[in-house]
Structure formats: C-alpha cells, structure tokens
Image (cartoon, rainbow, N blue to C red; front, side):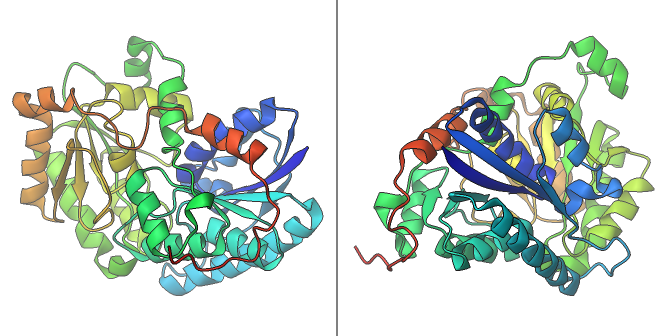
Length: 379
C-alpha cells in the first residue's frame, strides 16, 4: 500500500485533483490523506469543502489559512502561507505519507511542497514547467525545484523543467487533469439548466472568470471595471464566478456584486461543466480559458497579463485590459462565424482526458527510493 497526501486550497486545484482522487479511492493499493484549506473553507468564496464532501471524499483534516478580516494585500498572502505551512507540518507528521501529490502554483500547495521536501517525503508535482504572467510563475518554478517527480501537461513544459535542472527520468508528460473532469462529467438536460440559471443557450452566453493579478494588485478595480462595462454594453448573457483571494480580490468582488450581472461564489462541478458545455465563450484571465476551452471547442477572450506566455490553442484571443479591446475580442469570439467554425477544428494541447489514469499508474509503479537527494541535471 502507498499513502498519498493531498492538500486542496481552492476550486481551481480541486477541479484537477478530483479525477485523481477518484482513481486513488478506487484502488486498494492507495490510501489517501486529504487536507482542505484556503478559500475552500470560506463562505464568501462558496465554501467548496461542501462540494468535496458531497463528492464522497473523506477529509482527514482542515487547516484555517485565511483571516477574512485581514487586509487585502501581498503581506496577507505571505501570512496565509505561513499559517498553512505550520499546520501542514503537523498533518504530515500525523499522516506519515509515502508521497505528497502537490500541484500548480498556489500558496497552500507551495507550503506543503516545501514542508514535505524538508521532511524527506518525496513530492510529485502536477503541471510544473508552465509559464504564467504573475507571481504564480515564480511559485510554480520554485515548487518544481522542491519536487522529486514531475507531471507536466505538455512537452513544452517538460523541456522547460529540464532547462531548470530537473532529471528527464523523473518527468512524465500526462496532460492537464482538469480535462478529465470536462470529458467525464454527466450531462444535465439543457432545458433544466436554462431554467435554473435563467439563460437561453440559443443566444450569446459567456462565462466570466477574472482574478486579480498579484503583481498588478493596485489596478484590480480598474481592470474589472473595463470587463464589466463591456458585458453590460454588449447586453449579453453572462454568469460570473467570483475570483480567488489573491491580493486585489476584494475590489473585484465588490464591483461584481454591484454590477447587476448574475454572479456566484462557486458552482458544483456538474453545474459548472454543463454551463461550460453550452457557453458561447469564456472571458477573463483564468487558466481555464487556456487549459480547457479548446476541449469544448469554444473561444476564450484572455484579458491582460495573468496568462502571459502560457502555451495555448488558437481559440484564445489575447486582449489588453481595455474595454474597447475586450469588446472587439468578444465580438470576434461570439459573432465571427469563420473564426467560430475554425475553433471547432482545433485540438487541446493539454490532453484528451486521460491524465488522472496516467498519474495514478505512475504513482503506483514509480520507485520512491533515492529521490530525496536531488542533483542539478546538466544533460
């Protein structure tokens, strides 16, 4: 038996962990120790711990990470990481896992990666090697250097890991596990979904997800105002999901709540995926626009610098944080029939929906001996 430690902080990482957790749960070879922290514990962000429990996963521990009354700034992001770092050390001592499965580029997973590496516990990191346009990139690359086994999504990411000194023998290209969720989520009847969310899928409908850019936190209010102005000016149907709680989030949330646009702190996986299936486009700066929209063959209007440099399919329309540019991008995404027809032909560079199967197979077969003492790989 092999015990795997997983920490979930927000809906973005849970969407990627979910198919992996399902396969780990189904295989008696594995025991999973699941810790929930971050905004998954906060009402204002939808308290996603409820969705995790409803999906049937046993939660072994929770770690309070954020102080809802604290200031919205970079200093509080650091304090929150220190809280979860202290808490996760206790849980690692209690769980005594064989391996930690960490991922992506967010504070809670950064903390558990650092802690496990210092405690001589092998770390397997999902989606290292990718490029993004904020502090997230620094966190992601740092996590890779603390990790011992790598599960990048693409060959491009694999090559970048090798360039920063990771051994090719420890790198396995597996795709993005959130694609597994998109492919395998059961269908919900369109009519019932339209009724529940007061939508008409025969008319233009967009999902909007816009997070703060940590390195541009002071501009968050101006940036969200530009996007909201376009949605209202074009008078299109939209569902807005509230952002994560990186520095600059509070002004975004306040502006969304008073915009009059239909917003939700979070959604169940089933509802979100089925709304996604019927959306005409996604707009904002979420990694979902980069990783996932090409699976559903819909355009993504990617705003600003948050995903700058990230590998993407040709369905992504990059625009600056400017209302006129955003509107031009949305008009192309929604009404340019030639472009929309082209989007139907593209392939997703992040995989076909078999990532979880690959990850679990490797976790089952890979030797964990001799992984802790890392050596810079020079080719």
